[in-house]
Length: 378
Image (cartoon, rainbow, N blue to C red):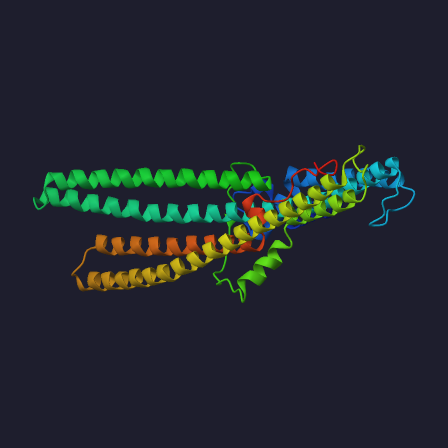
Protein backbone atom coordinates (compact mmCIF):
# COMPACT_ATOMS: atom_id res chain seq x y z
CA UNK A 1 0.00 0.00 0.00
CA UNK A 2 2.86 2.34 0.91
CA UNK A 3 4.56 1.64 -2.42
CA UNK A 4 1.35 2.49 -4.29
CA UNK A 5 1.05 5.81 -2.44
CA UNK A 6 4.69 6.61 -3.21
CA UNK A 7 4.17 5.79 -6.89
CA UNK A 8 1.07 7.99 -7.02
CA UNK A 9 2.99 10.85 -5.42
CA UNK A 10 5.79 10.52 -7.99
CA UNK A 11 3.30 10.50 -10.86
CA UNK A 12 1.54 13.53 -9.38
CA UNK A 13 4.83 15.47 -9.11
CA UNK A 14 5.73 14.61 -12.71
CA UNK A 15 2.27 15.71 -13.88
CA UNK A 16 2.52 19.00 -12.00
CA UNK A 17 5.98 19.60 -13.52
CA UNK A 18 4.61 19.36 -17.02
CA UNK A 19 1.58 21.49 -16.18
CA UNK A 20 3.87 24.16 -14.76
CA UNK A 21 5.90 24.44 -17.97
CA UNK A 22 5.49 27.76 -19.81
CA UNK A 23 3.32 28.03 -22.89
CA UNK A 24 6.44 28.35 -24.99
CA UNK A 25 9.13 25.83 -24.06
CA UNK A 26 12.54 25.52 -25.66
CA UNK A 27 12.37 21.71 -25.39
CA UNK A 28 9.41 21.61 -27.71
CA UNK A 29 9.95 24.83 -29.60
CA UNK A 30 8.96 23.45 -32.98
CA UNK A 31 5.42 22.63 -31.81
CA UNK A 32 4.76 25.56 -29.46
CA UNK A 33 2.76 28.62 -30.38
CA UNK A 34 4.42 32.00 -30.10
CA UNK A 35 2.59 35.31 -29.89
CA UNK A 36 4.24 38.55 -30.91
CA UNK A 37 4.26 39.77 -27.31
CA UNK A 38 6.00 36.58 -26.17
CA UNK A 39 8.61 37.02 -28.88
CA UNK A 40 9.22 40.62 -27.79
CA UNK A 41 9.59 39.65 -24.13
CA UNK A 42 12.00 36.85 -25.02
CA UNK A 43 14.06 39.16 -27.20
CA UNK A 44 14.31 41.88 -24.56
CA UNK A 45 15.53 39.34 -22.00
CA UNK A 46 18.00 37.72 -24.41
CA UNK A 47 19.54 40.66 -26.28
CA UNK A 48 23.10 41.50 -25.23
CA UNK A 49 22.78 45.06 -26.50
CA UNK A 50 19.99 45.70 -24.01
CA UNK A 51 22.08 44.21 -21.19
CA UNK A 52 25.04 46.41 -22.14
CA UNK A 53 22.79 49.49 -22.20
CA UNK A 54 21.40 48.59 -18.77
CA UNK A 55 24.92 48.23 -17.36
CA UNK A 56 25.91 51.57 -18.94
CA UNK A 57 23.32 53.36 -16.82
CA UNK A 58 24.96 52.05 -13.65
CA UNK A 59 28.47 52.83 -14.94
CA UNK A 60 27.71 56.43 -15.89
CA UNK A 61 25.79 56.96 -12.65
CA UNK A 62 28.92 56.11 -10.63
CA UNK A 63 30.98 58.53 -12.74
CA UNK A 64 28.35 61.24 -12.39
CA UNK A 65 28.14 60.81 -8.60
CA UNK A 66 31.92 60.95 -8.33
CA UNK A 67 31.98 64.20 -10.31
CA UNK A 68 29.21 65.61 -8.10
CA UNK A 69 31.18 64.75 -4.93
CA UNK A 70 33.99 67.02 -6.13
CA UNK A 71 31.65 70.03 -6.30
CA UNK A 72 31.28 72.00 -3.07
CA UNK A 73 28.46 74.21 -4.37
CA UNK A 74 26.46 74.51 -7.58
CA UNK A 75 27.03 77.26 -10.10
CA UNK A 76 24.52 80.03 -10.78
CA UNK A 77 23.70 80.79 -14.43
CA UNK A 78 25.36 84.04 -15.58
CA UNK A 79 28.02 84.14 -12.89
CA UNK A 80 31.62 84.39 -14.14
CA UNK A 81 33.76 84.71 -11.01
CA UNK A 82 34.54 81.02 -10.50
CA UNK A 83 38.05 79.63 -10.14
CA UNK A 84 39.64 77.68 -12.97
CA UNK A 85 39.55 74.48 -10.93
CA UNK A 86 35.85 74.92 -10.22
CA UNK A 87 35.02 75.67 -13.84
CA UNK A 88 36.76 72.48 -14.99
CA UNK A 89 35.00 70.46 -12.26
CA UNK A 90 31.65 71.97 -13.24
CA UNK A 91 32.29 71.06 -16.88
CA UNK A 92 33.09 67.49 -15.83
CA UNK A 93 29.90 67.25 -13.78
CA UNK A 94 27.69 68.60 -16.57
CA UNK A 95 29.13 66.16 -19.10
CA UNK A 96 29.03 63.25 -16.65
CA UNK A 97 25.40 64.03 -15.86
CA UNK A 98 24.65 64.27 -19.58
CA UNK A 99 26.29 60.88 -20.16
CA UNK A 100 24.17 59.36 -17.40
CA UNK A 101 20.95 60.89 -18.69
CA UNK A 102 21.84 59.85 -22.23
CA UNK A 103 22.53 56.27 -21.13
CA UNK A 104 18.90 56.06 -19.99
CA UNK A 105 17.75 57.44 -23.33
CA UNK A 106 20.02 54.96 -25.10
CA UNK A 107 18.50 52.03 -23.22
CA UNK A 108 15.04 53.20 -24.20
CA UNK A 109 15.96 53.62 -27.87
CA UNK A 110 17.85 50.29 -27.89
CA UNK A 111 14.70 48.58 -26.67
CA UNK A 112 12.57 50.46 -29.19
CA UNK A 113 14.82 49.39 -32.06
CA UNK A 114 14.87 45.78 -30.88
CA UNK A 115 11.09 45.62 -30.51
CA UNK A 116 10.65 46.98 -34.03
CA UNK A 117 13.17 44.49 -35.39
CA UNK A 118 11.43 41.58 -33.65
CA UNK A 119 8.06 42.69 -35.04
CA UNK A 120 9.51 42.84 -38.53
CA UNK A 121 11.19 39.43 -38.19
CA UNK A 122 8.01 37.89 -36.75
CA UNK A 123 5.98 39.22 -39.66
CA UNK A 124 8.68 38.21 -42.16
CA UNK A 125 8.21 34.61 -41.08
CA UNK A 126 4.45 34.86 -41.63
CA UNK A 127 4.98 36.40 -45.07
CA UNK A 128 7.39 33.61 -45.96
CA UNK A 129 4.83 31.03 -44.81
CA UNK A 130 2.20 32.64 -47.05
CA UNK A 131 4.56 32.39 -50.00
CA UNK A 132 5.25 28.73 -49.32
CA UNK A 133 1.53 27.97 -49.22
CA UNK A 134 0.97 29.85 -52.48
CA UNK A 135 3.89 28.10 -54.17
CA UNK A 136 2.51 24.74 -53.02
CA UNK A 137 -0.76 25.53 -54.81
CA UNK A 138 1.13 26.64 -57.92
CA UNK A 139 3.18 23.43 -57.90
CA UNK A 140 0.01 21.32 -57.55
CA UNK A 141 -1.61 23.27 -60.39
CA UNK A 142 1.45 22.82 -62.63
CA UNK A 143 1.53 19.09 -61.88
CA UNK A 144 -2.17 18.72 -62.71
CA UNK A 145 -1.61 20.61 -65.97
CA UNK A 146 1.30 18.31 -66.82
CA UNK A 147 -0.79 15.21 -66.08
CA UNK A 148 -3.55 16.54 -68.36
CA UNK A 149 -1.00 17.23 -71.11
CA UNK A 150 0.43 13.72 -70.86
CA UNK A 151 -3.06 12.27 -70.99
CA UNK A 152 -3.80 14.41 -74.05
CA UNK A 153 -0.60 13.24 -75.70
CA UNK A 154 -1.61 9.62 -75.22
CA UNK A 155 -5.04 10.43 -76.66
CA UNK A 156 -3.49 12.24 -79.58
CA UNK A 157 -5.12 15.59 -78.76
CA UNK A 158 -2.00 17.36 -77.47
CA UNK A 159 1.29 18.00 -79.27
CA UNK A 160 4.55 16.81 -77.68
CA UNK A 161 5.72 20.45 -77.42
CA UNK A 162 2.85 21.18 -75.04
CA UNK A 163 3.98 18.37 -72.77
CA UNK A 164 7.54 19.71 -72.79
CA UNK A 165 6.23 23.16 -71.90
CA UNK A 166 4.10 21.73 -69.07
CA UNK A 167 7.10 19.81 -67.73
CA UNK A 168 9.17 23.00 -67.77
CA UNK A 169 6.46 24.87 -65.89
CA UNK A 170 6.20 22.12 -63.30
CA UNK A 171 9.97 22.07 -62.78
CA UNK A 172 9.99 25.84 -62.38
CA UNK A 173 7.14 25.61 -59.87
CA UNK A 174 9.10 23.00 -57.87
CA UNK A 175 12.18 25.23 -57.91
CA UNK A 176 10.14 28.21 -56.74
CA UNK A 177 8.61 26.14 -53.95
CA UNK A 178 12.06 25.02 -52.83
CA UNK A 179 13.29 28.63 -52.87
CA UNK A 180 10.25 29.73 -50.82
CA UNK A 181 10.98 27.01 -48.27
CA UNK A 182 14.60 28.17 -48.03
CA UNK A 183 13.41 31.75 -47.50
CA UNK A 184 11.09 30.54 -44.74
CA UNK A 185 13.99 28.79 -43.02
CA UNK A 186 16.08 31.97 -43.28
CA UNK A 187 13.22 34.05 -41.84
CA UNK A 188 12.85 31.66 -38.91
CA UNK A 189 16.61 31.68 -38.29
CA UNK A 190 16.62 35.51 -38.19
CA UNK A 191 13.76 35.57 -35.69
CA UNK A 192 15.22 32.80 -33.55
CA UNK A 193 18.54 34.62 -33.38
CA UNK A 194 16.81 37.72 -32.05
CA UNK A 195 14.81 35.96 -29.33
CA UNK A 196 17.35 33.34 -28.25
CA UNK A 197 15.91 30.17 -29.76
CA UNK A 198 17.81 27.39 -31.46
CA UNK A 199 18.11 28.05 -35.20
CA UNK A 200 16.13 24.90 -35.97
CA UNK A 201 13.12 25.86 -33.83
CA UNK A 202 9.88 26.33 -35.72
CA UNK A 203 7.25 27.76 -33.35
CA UNK A 204 3.85 28.53 -34.82
CA UNK A 205 3.39 32.27 -35.07
CA UNK A 206 -0.26 32.78 -34.29
CA UNK A 207 -0.65 36.55 -34.07
CA UNK A 208 -1.53 38.42 -37.25
CA UNK A 209 -1.70 42.23 -37.11
CA UNK A 210 -5.04 43.83 -37.81
CA UNK A 211 -5.29 46.45 -40.51
CA UNK A 212 -6.39 49.80 -39.15
CA UNK A 213 -5.75 53.05 -41.04
CA UNK A 214 -3.40 55.54 -39.44
CA UNK A 215 -5.37 58.49 -38.08
CA UNK A 216 -3.57 61.81 -37.72
CA UNK A 217 -5.63 64.98 -37.22
CA UNK A 218 -2.76 67.39 -37.77
CA UNK A 219 0.42 66.03 -39.31
CA UNK A 220 2.78 68.83 -38.26
CA UNK A 221 1.54 68.79 -34.67
CA UNK A 222 1.96 65.03 -34.51
CA UNK A 223 5.43 65.24 -36.06
CA UNK A 224 6.41 67.87 -33.49
CA UNK A 225 5.18 65.66 -30.66
CA UNK A 226 7.05 62.61 -31.95
CA UNK A 227 10.29 64.47 -32.64
CA UNK A 228 10.28 65.97 -29.15
CA UNK A 229 10.74 62.41 -27.84
CA UNK A 230 13.72 61.67 -30.09
CA UNK A 231 16.89 60.82 -28.11
CA UNK A 232 19.12 62.44 -30.75
CA UNK A 233 17.10 65.67 -30.65
CA UNK A 234 17.23 65.65 -26.85
CA UNK A 235 21.00 65.15 -26.87
CA UNK A 236 21.57 67.99 -29.34
CA UNK A 237 19.55 70.36 -27.16
CA UNK A 238 21.46 69.33 -24.04
CA UNK A 239 24.71 70.20 -25.78
CA UNK A 240 23.32 73.69 -26.37
CA UNK A 241 22.81 74.00 -22.62
CA UNK A 242 26.38 72.96 -21.92
CA UNK A 243 27.73 75.51 -24.40
CA UNK A 244 25.59 78.19 -22.74
CA UNK A 245 27.28 77.36 -19.45
CA UNK A 246 30.67 77.44 -21.17
CA UNK A 247 29.93 80.90 -22.57
CA UNK A 248 29.96 82.29 -19.03
CA UNK A 249 33.18 80.54 -17.96
CA UNK A 250 36.38 81.42 -19.77
CA UNK A 251 38.32 78.45 -18.28
CA UNK A 252 35.49 75.93 -18.70
CA UNK A 253 37.62 73.44 -20.67
CA UNK A 254 40.78 73.97 -18.62
CA UNK A 255 42.27 76.58 -20.89
CA UNK A 256 41.32 80.14 -21.74
CA UNK A 257 38.85 80.69 -24.57
CA UNK A 258 37.91 84.17 -25.83
CA UNK A 259 34.33 85.20 -25.17
CA UNK A 260 33.58 85.60 -28.88
CA UNK A 261 34.70 82.03 -29.52
CA UNK A 262 32.43 80.81 -26.76
CA UNK A 263 29.53 82.75 -28.26
CA UNK A 264 30.15 81.15 -31.64
CA UNK A 265 30.20 77.71 -29.99
CA UNK A 266 26.70 78.39 -28.63
CA UNK A 267 25.51 79.37 -32.11
CA UNK A 268 27.04 76.21 -33.57
CA UNK A 269 25.34 74.01 -30.98
CA UNK A 270 22.00 75.69 -31.68
CA UNK A 271 22.44 75.16 -35.43
CA UNK A 272 23.31 71.50 -34.85
CA UNK A 273 20.26 71.08 -32.64
CA UNK A 274 17.99 72.71 -35.23
CA UNK A 275 19.49 70.55 -38.00
CA UNK A 276 19.08 67.37 -35.97
CA UNK A 277 15.46 68.24 -35.27
CA UNK A 278 14.73 69.03 -38.91
CA UNK A 279 16.27 65.75 -40.09
CA UNK A 280 14.16 63.81 -37.61
CA UNK A 281 11.07 65.68 -38.79
CA UNK A 282 11.83 64.71 -42.38
CA UNK A 283 12.31 61.06 -41.40
CA UNK A 284 9.04 61.09 -39.46
CA UNK A 285 7.12 62.62 -42.36
CA UNK A 286 8.60 60.06 -44.75
CA UNK A 287 7.25 57.23 -42.61
CA UNK A 288 3.84 58.90 -42.58
CA UNK A 289 3.69 59.28 -46.36
CA UNK A 290 4.94 55.72 -46.86
CA UNK A 291 2.12 54.54 -44.61
CA UNK A 292 -0.40 56.48 -46.68
CA UNK A 293 0.89 54.83 -49.87
CA UNK A 294 0.43 51.40 -48.33
CA UNK A 295 -3.15 52.30 -47.42
CA UNK A 296 -3.85 53.16 -51.05
CA UNK A 297 -2.33 49.86 -52.17
CA UNK A 298 -4.36 48.01 -49.56
CA UNK A 299 -7.66 49.27 -50.96
CA UNK A 300 -6.61 48.20 -54.46
CA UNK A 301 -5.53 44.79 -53.13
CA UNK A 302 -8.93 44.31 -51.48
CA UNK A 303 -10.60 44.87 -54.83
CA UNK A 304 -8.19 42.40 -56.41
CA UNK A 305 -9.12 39.77 -53.83
CA UNK A 306 -12.82 40.38 -54.40
CA UNK A 307 -12.42 39.80 -58.13
CA UNK A 308 -10.29 36.70 -57.59
CA UNK A 309 -12.90 35.21 -55.24
CA UNK A 310 -15.65 35.92 -57.76
CA UNK A 311 -13.62 34.23 -60.52
CA UNK A 312 -13.15 31.21 -58.27
CA UNK A 313 -16.88 31.03 -57.60
CA UNK A 314 -17.57 31.08 -61.34
CA UNK A 315 -14.89 28.46 -62.02
CA UNK A 316 -16.39 26.09 -59.44
CA UNK A 317 -19.88 26.63 -60.85
CA UNK A 318 -18.62 25.87 -64.34
CA UNK A 319 -16.86 22.74 -63.08
CA UNK A 320 -20.10 21.57 -61.44
CA UNK A 321 -21.89 22.22 -64.72
CA UNK A 322 -19.26 20.26 -66.65
CA UNK A 323 -18.06 23.22 -68.73
CA UNK A 324 -14.70 23.62 -66.95
CA UNK A 325 -11.97 21.25 -65.77
CA UNK A 326 -10.27 20.91 -62.42
CA UNK A 327 -7.18 22.87 -63.48
CA UNK A 328 -9.40 25.90 -64.21
CA UNK A 329 -10.54 25.81 -60.60
CA UNK A 330 -6.95 25.34 -59.39
CA UNK A 331 -5.86 28.36 -61.42
CA UNK A 332 -8.59 30.43 -59.78
CA UNK A 333 -7.56 29.11 -56.34
CA UNK A 334 -3.98 30.19 -56.98
CA UNK A 335 -5.21 33.67 -57.92
CA UNK A 336 -7.16 33.91 -54.66
CA UNK A 337 -4.14 32.74 -52.67
CA UNK A 338 -1.92 35.32 -54.37
CA UNK A 339 -4.45 38.09 -53.75
CA UNK A 340 -4.78 37.13 -50.08
CA UNK A 341 -1.01 36.91 -49.78
CA UNK A 342 -0.71 40.46 -51.13
CA UNK A 343 -3.23 41.75 -48.59
CA UNK A 344 -1.50 39.96 -45.72
CA UNK A 345 1.86 41.38 -46.72
CA UNK A 346 0.47 44.90 -47.02
CA UNK A 347 -1.17 44.53 -43.61
CA UNK A 348 2.17 43.60 -42.04
CA UNK A 349 4.01 46.38 -43.85
CA UNK A 350 1.36 48.83 -42.69
CA UNK A 351 1.67 47.69 -39.08
CA UNK A 352 5.45 48.11 -39.25
CA UNK A 353 5.24 51.60 -40.80
CA UNK A 354 2.79 52.74 -38.14
CA UNK A 355 5.26 51.70 -35.45
CA UNK A 356 8.12 53.35 -37.35
CA UNK A 357 6.12 56.58 -37.63
CA UNK A 358 5.60 56.71 -33.87
CA UNK A 359 9.28 55.99 -33.10
CA UNK A 360 11.27 56.88 -36.21
CA UNK A 361 14.61 56.74 -34.38
CA UNK A 362 14.05 53.02 -33.84
CA UNK A 363 13.61 52.36 -37.57
CA UNK A 364 16.01 54.90 -39.06
CA UNK A 365 19.03 54.20 -36.90
CA UNK A 366 18.79 57.71 -35.45
CA UNK A 367 18.67 56.36 -31.92
CA UNK A 368 20.71 59.12 -30.40
CA UNK A 369 23.20 56.61 -29.04
CA UNK A 370 26.17 58.57 -30.33
CA UNK A 371 28.87 59.14 -27.76
CA UNK A 372 28.51 62.13 -25.49
CA UNK A 373 31.20 64.75 -25.71
CA UNK A 374 33.82 64.65 -22.97
CA UNK A 375 34.06 68.41 -22.93
CA UNK A 376 32.29 71.49 -24.17
CA UNK A 377 32.77 72.38 -27.79
CA UNK A 378 33.87 68.90 -28.83
